[in-house]
Length: 157
Image: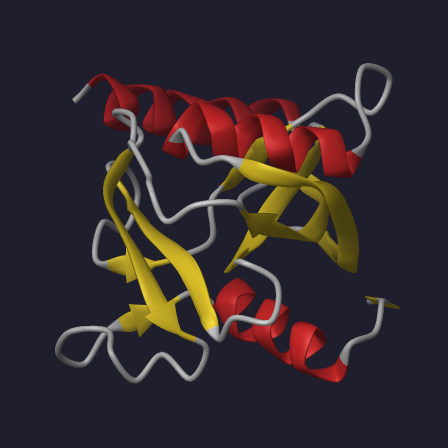
């Protein structure tokens, strides 16, 4: 409940202040060479949407790779390998703010996850998303990250 209230207050602030934000989304691969990724449904916003874990960061304090690792550990309690790679950069202008979003690829050491209150569900799924239940709504960032991962290259948009 508290996350939903904070989410709404943040949206109002963005409409008034129009800040520049920096965020990360993490494509977590289950062990190197695996064809499984970790997707989440948040406890705020569109709760039916499967997405990538992530959050905001301050570039003066940490780089995108460090931020992605921190967010994944905070939200999911997942153990990660030390290597991280920025797959994509996006400039967004959604919701009254200008955002700089980085999609970072990380590799999990184990399958174990312990979601916090921000996450209503976490699930390891095939990269083709075929084993998500029903007819799932999936974030455009999931599709973008999977495409960049499959191509094996960094790109900036």
